Length: 628
Image (cartoon, rainbow, N blue to C red; front, top):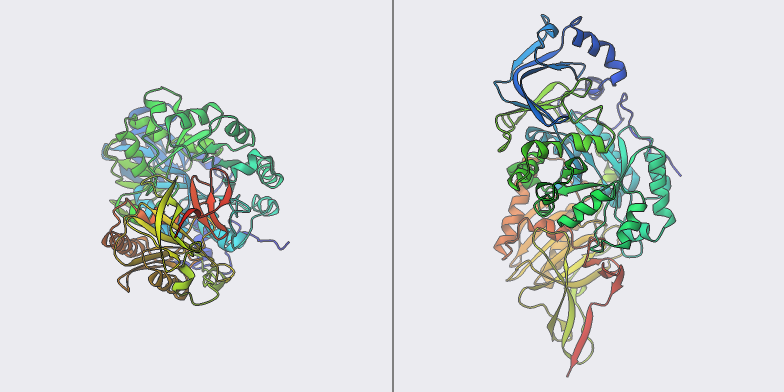
């Protein structure tokens, strides 16, 4: 098996470029000394023998280690780390020390996102970092399993390598499940235990990405257990993903399989059970997942130990990042749900760092830790006034003050949409049984602000031998795009509210990332699909025979390397176009992109057919027919 060598921290990759400076210079500049390398100077500065690089005075320091506010405390920074944290840092100041006045504001640790997918923002790691730094995010634990489904281990390496270049901490979890459900979908590439073992040696790999194949773990699948074993042998963390409603024996079998956290809970009982089983319960607020309010009562009402709970985003759209925020948005929401602000901050800082074994590196304002910190005027509304990462001021008043270098994405990462032919309306037909007047079909029911769908049924008319949608029921199709087979799977979906003549297509189609097309007109569905084939991927929406919105995503059909504001503006046209077609769901494009996620109940679509996720099996679309 060929080796997919990852970029080392002290060497430039041959295909790297920087936005503003030479890459080799940038890598050296960004290289953070380990604690062991920095220790002599940290001790000398704390003792007053050497001057600090930076001292921040006049602050109300939020100590997440003890959950208290320390008035008038000061910090001294050197080598990108905190050297002194205490009431008076005057002994650390020399002629060259940069002294900054906190203005009496709160000094809090930089925020950490415990579980997320960069690709969901439709941005590369560099542009995602540029978008979230002004919101106070200084650490992310990312799972690039979206690109893994399209480009395999090579794609993971590309994400990992660009992540290492950034001025903040971006750790990569090696994707575990491509495909997410073997036998129910076909991916562009397959991840194997050998890939996992290889990636565990890369410098930015922090653990194994969410183990979505929970039926495989429960059944003792040797491949899944081998991936978990390789991760544990490397001393790293196994991410969890248990999306079933069964909290009985099945869950306990999954917990015994080794996942150390889980973000798929939607109810208080889920949060409590995970914590009781020694897992960190991750409460998510993404663009379309609102699972904090229903679970945080485990802390606010039941009084459980909050150190076993973590805040995360999972999936954040570029529109959300630009207009609402990132982890600052999640912390505010947790506070709005009744959580003590200091506890909410712990759940987005020290709890996350501790979970990944990094509590001596980050997540708090304490000696030896990376100097990631935020000045804010209020702990409830949480304005992000100033952001420091590794002791450097990287954002102020919402403005980015650093560069986020780009990886030079190769041609192999582009032109990944292979339809195999020009599609036409016939590819989107659903034939009815002979002599049928009406048919009863299974329908995917979209649930606003939730990842799960509902398994519905509906009676639909038959016209000229074809099943026709009606009212709120649209056609949905999954178009194979990795191998150019020309295959199209057709079914029905309800809940978007579309009316008139329209179609929307997207190559962002978790997790196998074929192409999802939803529409009320078969010819327009074909036009939308062909359009994405022509531009190399993205999202397009058509109405009355014309394209009214387009986001081009040339990298793996998932990401753009343009700035977040530009991508968000294009994505906003998609959301507006969806509303023009009758859809008023919150962030409906996220709901659209998850209709092929065959590891979350109840009903999904894949290249192999309609999937009953409660049984993990392919199911028939047509249940019954009324004959003439």
